[in-house]
Amino acid sequence: MRAGLGCITLGREHHFAVIFKANAKLASFVFINFELVGQNIASFCKRESHNLNVPFAKTIDKGCIGASLPSAWPTYLPFKQTISAIMNTASDARFWDRSSRKYGAGKIADQAGYEQTLDRTRALLQPDDRVLELGCGTGTTALRLAGSVQAYLATDISSEMIAIAEGKRAADPIAGLSFRVTTAEGLALSDGPYNAVLGFNYLHLVRDLPGTLRHIHALLAPGGLFISKTPCVGEMNPLIRLVLPLMRAVGLAPYAGVFRAAELSQIISAAGFSILASENHATKGNDNRPYIVARKQ
Image 1 (cartoon, one colour):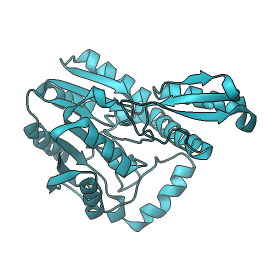
Image 2: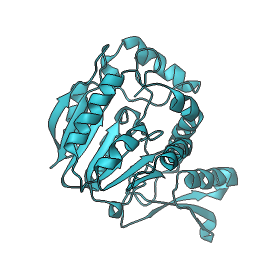
Image 3: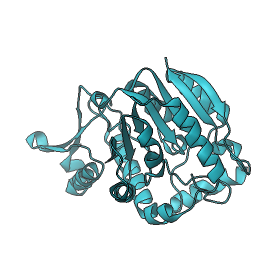
């Protein structure tokens, strides 16, 4: 939970970006014709699917190559859509890999507000809960909360972020805490169900917000909680919305969705959740990050 780009909070002890829509039962194949795109694209897909922990399989017949995705995509996706999705996720992962050391060494801008968020979240969790954290960054929050529950899986798209988190865990082991490089959609439904899913400073970094929320809903146990705290870029200085695309173009900022707090609540509700609470934990400045507690319906 750190400040970046002036008054906009794009730092993420909890970031997230996603492309794959997972299905625990079926793996679809995206076929790429060598004659149309060449082996350079196929090699790119293979490399990036490996980096993102996505299984990859070659199919020799008909001169095609298949990337086996843990996905609910249609069985044969249009080539352009497939490559665009893979490249977006790869780009997001590289951005956070590059930022990991500087990010990990930074300070939390509003420590008192962060502590309030931790206390509120801890009060919502039960000792026998299984918890999933999405976009865990360098693991700071996971290390603070994991001791309060039975099992805590903290995930992030960035392998470099997870490497830093693993180093922290080695220095301060906590029973039941584990880290994994993956996205929400990279998690099979059989990995759950979870009693709570956490996403702090995360939802604004998701490219397919409705789809990701539907998958979170599927990962939760009946009545499970989705707890989030999200920068609402739509309520920040309009100049920020103008500058962000330019900064993204030169690699100085990640993808960031633009929405207001009311819109965010509507999207969460549309994914099958009932909003139990929407709070502001900021102790200084105009934070524009609602802390939302939602229950799976």
